[in-house]
Image (cartoon, rainbow, N blue to C red; front, top):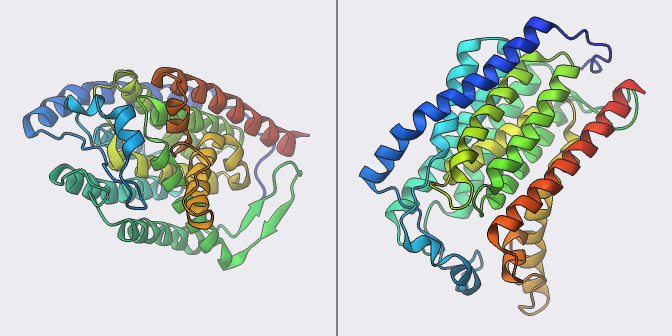
Length: 350
């Protein structure tokens, strides 16, 4: 794979199109929201909170923190709003099939996995077993990532990775780019899914991440990817408008898995996968807190590191109001995104 373009002439008409795409994503999502809300309340698509943890124990702390919230009916699966908006507008724009078909297909494929999980959850009793079994869910997301990785290598010809902070230095991987692609996509999908636990949290963080990647794609001259990202930002701003505390609805797994999968694919496309943990630092912290918590319980006879994981619930448990946790995590997300962008600029232009 050729190194990223370092001297890109910014095309005014392309930049205008990006603005229009982002605006279109916002407006279409706004237009679809009343339709979704009507259907959600008519069909009673209520989110059922888990009463058990991943290890099978009773989710006592979580129910203490969020039990009252779930006594009022809050619809889930609102992720279908931005999934439809992003898919429709990106495909209608038809900017660059080579750059947009794979992200849209992976985005939509992961959404289907999440949709099945949400439907089972709605029909279930809210226990730890509600939804798809964890192993099956992981297998299905991995399958989506595997198909995407195959297309990425065999059809699009990507076979190397740029090293951040080093001008024109890349690591040749050949077909090994496929398992790398799979690892990045599956890990990011699950990390974003774990972050979707407070009103406005996942929507705001992913909007920040996709906005950062839109800038990176523009600077690389990859306007198809930039268009996909700007549509995503517009749609997510619309979603977050209604999802901030107190939330009108939740995105559900249909939204979080789709967003995480798309974010991983975009990182691979822009050849900045090693910057993803910096740009998406909060997602890394969220997933890491879950991994550390489970490992600590198994290796230290049930002793915990955090009062509850993911880490956003830990801060709630020590007394931070939900809205404060969300906004402070947004600030951390903005700082880490700027740091990632700065590292990208140093590697490409210094």
